[in-house]
View (cartoon, rainbow, N blue to C red):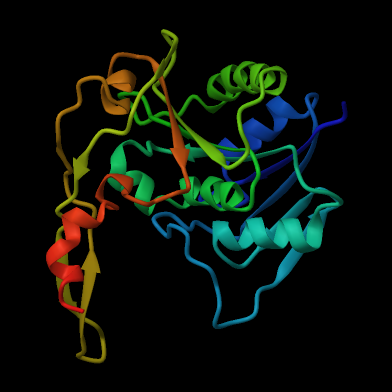
Length: 252
């Protein structure tokens, strides 16, 4: 079978992680890259609804969009690709997307979720730096090639996004784990611009970790690749019982 992959990210088309992944996968499939023209981190599932979008063609399989990762998915499917892709892969991200809040904010994960919303199989891939803030993108791309080749032979359901977080190599293996919890309390920096107007800058701050045992956070800390399957159904089904909301229902 001749596979077609769509690659994107939230770090921009110039990202070393994206290029390492494209280079590693090029003999597995025909690869199209449709990526933002600049960094779009922490933009989540945002769509550009109030301005036009532009696509720049770098060459026949590389396209740059002045929009968000979710925009890239829509434009790739509706305008650019010759057919629906067999796999949508977002990454390799510079830094982790671990825990519930990272996943909620991440543009990298959002691209994979957007593909899953549209009934496609998708992956988000993020890499942690080593102690010297070095990212081993080539090693990460090589191990992800093995994983992706396995997934092609052992398909997972469409509509599921697989969130991979890789520690710095060497990799001890893979753990299938739920999302952990990181609570962010960002610093708000207040200053005055040259025209005398007040402005605010939201910093990242140091996240407070919740319980990490058995989660993606613990897995990468121990040197394992963390895999968390993500659903696109946000319904809290355990609270759908009318008895839980009886007082509310009695208002009408």
